[in-house]
Image 1 (cartoon, rainbow, N blue to C red):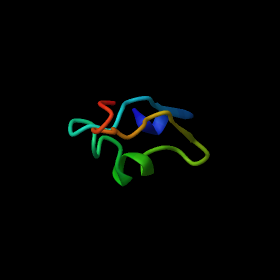
Image 2: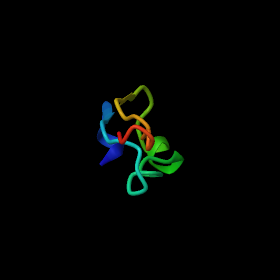
Image 3: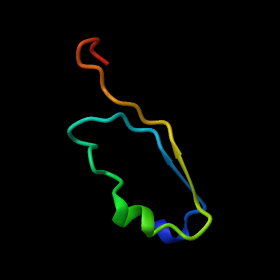
Image 4: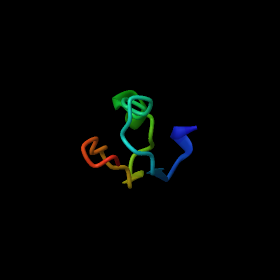
Length: 49
């Protein structure tokens, strides 16, 4: 599926379940010139988000 993407959007928060969701293997499967839009954010456990 990734080899057919022109744009990959990642809106998931960084959690134990999503850590490693996109790794080098996945990103290299994107075609040349593809864009990655990363809206994800880390988790601030002290603040609860």
